[in-house]
Image 1 (cartoon, rainbow, N blue to C red):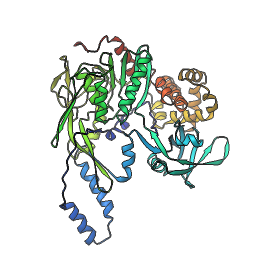
Image 2 (image 1 turned 135 degrees about the vertical axis):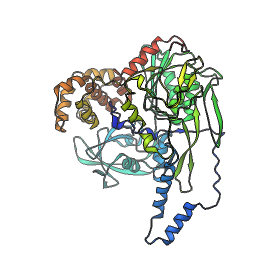
Image 3 (image 1 turned 180 degrees about the vertical axis):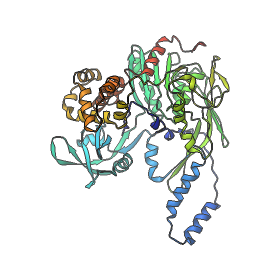
Image 4 (image 1 turned 90 degrees about the horizontal axis):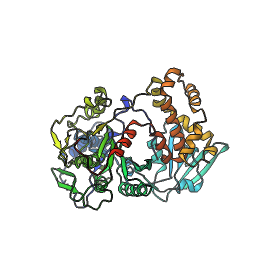
Length: 539
C-alpha cells in the first residue's frame, strides 16, 4: 500500500512523517544487554495499590499502556513504545514483505478506492481491478467517516493463508461483486525507481532503508550500467531512514578499501566502526547525492560517508539531523520499545544529531517549522547550526556537525509557481482526486498505452487543465485565472504524473514529476561536470 505524494510542502506540513524515521542497529555481533531481574519497581507497586484499593474500578491495562508511552516520551525524541496492536504495521515498513491482499489504495469520499493491484498478488489472482471501490469486508459495510488508513491496513492485512471476503463496486456493473481473497506475502519496495534521466546518467530514488534496500540498490545499479550509465544520482529526499547496515552496504559500493563509513557508540553499546572492504563495484564512478530537510538517519549516514570521504557531491538542502541509533527490544506481552542506545558519527567525527532536551519533544518537533520561518529553505545564508565546530573531509574540505548534513551545493525551494489557488487545490488533494476520476473514466483507453512518454504525449492533447479547473469549482474552489496561469506548469505536471502513476505506477510517475524539478536538474548538471571519483577542493 502506497502513500500519495503531493508536490507542495507547506509550513504546517513540514514535520509530517519525520519522527517515524528510524536508524535501527542490526549487527549479529552486538546486542544491548538488559538485566531487569525479578524486583518490582515503584510503578509496579503503584499499579497494584491502585488496582486493589482505588475507590472505582480501573482499567489497569490501559493505564499501563499510557504510563509506558509517557515514560518513553521523557527520554529522547526517537525512542518509542510500540503497542502490540501496532507492532506488525510498524515493523512491516522496513521488512521485505508483509502479508495482505496486494492492493494500493486511497480513501476518497469515505470509500476505499483501489489505485492499483500488485502484479501477481492475491487480489490480482481473484480478479480485482484498479478503480474498484471496496464497500464491504466480511459481509459488513466498510465505508463512512470512521474509515482511515490504519483501520484499512489492520483489516486487510493478516496472517498468510487466511481469507478475507470483500465486496466491491465497479464502474459499469450495477451489483456488488464479492471476492474471497487468501492473504499472501506482498513485497515492500524501497527503491522507488531507477532510470536513465539523461544520456549516461543513472538516477535511483530510495524511499527508505529496509531489509531489501541494498539488494534492490545493487540490481538498480547493474541495470543502469547495462543501459549505458557511467555516472549516478542517488535521490534520498524524504527518506527518513531505516536499518544502518543497509546504508553501510550501499556506501561500501562506492568507497576504496579501508575508508571509514560510520562509527557509533553509547554507554552500553561498544564502539563500532564500519570500513569499506574494497570490493565495491562502483568505486570510480562520478556520484551526486540528493538530500532535503526530510532526509534522516540512514540517509545521513550514506550522505555523510560520501561527503567526508570526498567521494560524491551532496546537492539539496540541509538534512533533518538524526544521529541516534535505536534498538528494538521486546516485552513479554508482544509489545516493544525502540530504545536509543547509541549515537553515530560520520568519518570526520561529526555527530549529525541536532540538539534536543529530554522530555521536550514538542520543541524538537518545531525545528523544521523554525527552519522554514528563518528562511533556511530559500537561502543558504539563513542556515543556523548549533555546533560551529569545523571538521575536515579526507581531502581537507570544511564540513559542519550539530544538525544534519549541509549540502555542498544548495538548492532552494522552487516557489516560482506558488499561488493561493495552487495551495488550496493541493492541500485538499484535488489534483490527485481529479487524476483518479479521469483515470477511472478513461481506463480502457489509457491501458493501451505502454510508456510514460506516449502517455504524456496523449495527455498533452486532452485539455486537462480546464477539466481540472471545472472539477475544483465543483468542490468549491473558485477559478482565479491569473493565479491559474502562474501555476499552470505545476498543475499540469502534477495531474499528468498522477494519471500516469495510476496506470504505469512509479516507473511512469517520477520521470514526469521530476521533469522541471530544480534540485534534480542541478544534480544532472553537477554529475555531468564531474570527471573522476574524488571531489576536488574547489567544491
